Length: 433
Image (cartoon, rainbow, N blue to C red; front, side, top):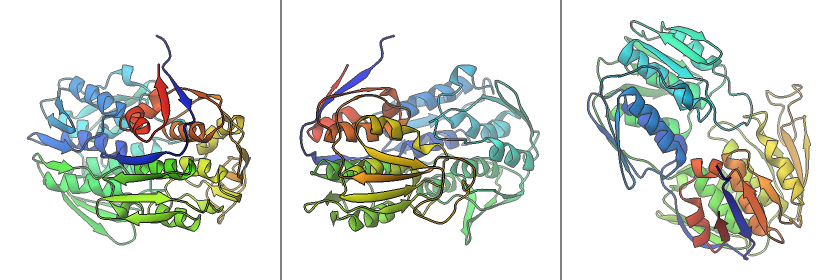
């Protein structure tokens, strides 16, 4: 099969309007949650991303019906035909691990292949496995995947070693139909977690939020169906705001509420960006150029790790030395060599810069970067290693001198809603071939 490429010619400032749909990180989790209902559920404002197709194929194999019409996805639950997610899905994304809890409720047993997703550092399944064992499941990790069995999941108390989004989702999906009460301590509180919990509550789940990262779930005997409209993708919204700023233009982003972008809006404003914010859209421009900044990523409500890849490109166009300290994934800076090959002046370090010592202190993980701007970027031939790094490569190509060829574009199409159309609408010369 011929590799798909994007050819990008820099075409000046990017300007115009972009509408973001629901988050990749939300839609697939809602689709899994819908398995637990006794009636159909409908998810609206769903993005047209590869992640949806992958998750739909898994659900259909298991015995669910998935109906897609425009921006609506309806999941019609059915008896589980086969509680084994095929090995063909090995490594495609991280959704299979989230299906273990629902399958144990529906079929008493499950097999899921090894998870994939972006190669941004260790995202161990240990938290998921230990949580399911705490509910009373027998879980075995094999070379090709994970086997689990349980006659009945029973509510439990779980303290996560780290507020992992995926592990919090696994516990929620297992707890809602478990017998008795479950208390999750040190839970993730990202907007996508809240959105999933609200959807489960609409289905009939007993969920309450307590201070200090605690979620309490009272198990119920059955869930019904629900309808929801996903809020706009905060990662995508930020990425397009940066696309305008990095090229000296201005992009107006519709569909993502301001409360999902509080932290990055302030970060960009400190760098010299000016904002216009209404109930319907957010627009950023930097008529007087950009100043450097020191930013540390963190769990919500901190600066999200998925925001730092476009920010790194923006740092190359800010006048001075910027610092980025990544504390969520230890291999998140794996995309930096591609930017360096395009002329970005970035040095990476295995020490904690730009913030207090984090959990990667003294581990040898390269997780801090110093960026000198303004860098003159040049076009290049770049392979995208993951979704977010893919978007940063597009931004670098948009501001570079000379044409660029981007490979591995399936990554960006897995996570962003129709990116070719969106970039072209902003004035970028982009050919897909």
